Amino acid sequence: MSEVFAAITGASSGIGRATALRLAQAGCGLLLGARREVELEAVAEQARPYGGKVAFRWLDVSDPGACEAFVDEFHRRSEGLRPVLVQAAGIGFFGPVGRWDEESARAAVETNLVGAMRIASLSAAWMRGRQARIVHVLSIAAARTLPNSAVYSATKAGLLAFDRVLREELRRSGVLTTSILPGAVDTPIWEEGKGPDRREMLTAEAVAETIAEVATAPHDRAFDEIVLMPPKGIL
Ligand SMILES: NC(=O)c1ccc[n+]([C@@H]2O[C@H](COP(=O)([O-])OP(=O)(O)OC[C@H]3O[C@@H](n4cnc5c(N)ncnc54)[C@H](OP(=O)(O)O)[C@@H]3O)[C@@H](O)[C@H]2O)c1
Image 1: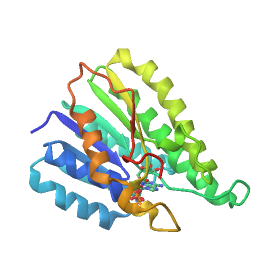
Image 2: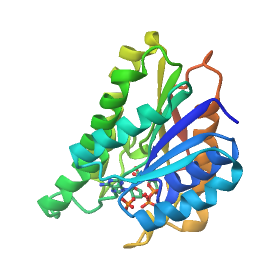
Image 3: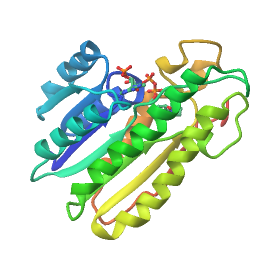
Image 4: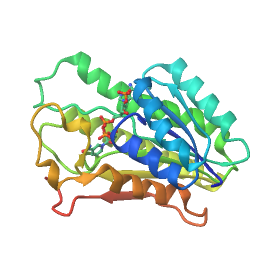
C-alpha cells in the first residue's frame, strides 16, 4: 500500500473521477468529495478492489460547513500518512462579456475560486511538517486569452495567483503546491453547448496520470506549475 492518502474534490466525474481511480491503482487511501453521492459511491466501489481504504462524503465547495467537515475527515483519515489534496471540483462558464446572468457568474466564482481557496486554507492549517502536497486543477484559461471565457478565466487566473502565494508560504514547511493548467479535456463539462472536437482533446486519464505522478512523487522534488495540452494546442 502507498504512504499517500489523497482527498479529491470533484471526484464524481471527469478528471476528479479518473484521478481517484488512478490513485486507487497506486494503492493510495482516498477520501472522495462532490455533491452527487450516487456517482461518488460508484467511483468508490470501482476504487476499492485495488486494496486502499476508500471513503466518500457529500461536499459542496460553496458551503463553508461542508468544506470544514470534509477537511476534518481528511485530517483524521490521513493520520500517519502523506496527505495530498487534489482539487478538481469546478464548473465551466462561457459566453461573451456582458451576456451572463450574475447568479451563474457568482456560482462559478464561489466554486472555482472561493471554495478551492477555502479548502486549501483549511488543509494547510494542519499539513505543515507532513510531506504533504496540494494539487489544483486550474486551466490553460488561467494563462492564455480564450474568447467567451472571461468569468471562467478570472476564476482560474485568481486561483493561479492564490497558488503562487500559497506555494511560497508553504514550501519550506514541507507542503508542496502544484498548479496544473490543462487545455481541453474530454469530460462531461463539454456536454452542454458547442465546443471543440472532443476527439482532439486530452483524455481525463491523461490528466489523472499527471496528477498521480505528482501526488506519489518523492518529496525531494516540487512541481510548481504544469501546462498540459492536447497535441494540437488550443482547440
Ligand atoms: N474539461 C476540460 O476541458 C477542462 C480543462 C481545463 C480544466 N478543467 C477543470 O478541471 C476540473 C474538473 O472538470 P471536468 O472537466 O472533470 O468536469 P466534470 O466532469 O463536469 O467534473 C466537475 C466536477 O466538479 C464537481 N463539482 C462542481 N461543482 C461542485 C461544488 N459546488 N461542490 C463540489 N463539487 C463540485 C462535480 O461534482 P458534482 O456535480 O457531483 O458536485 C464534478 O465531480 C474543473 O475545475 C475544470 O474547470 C477542465
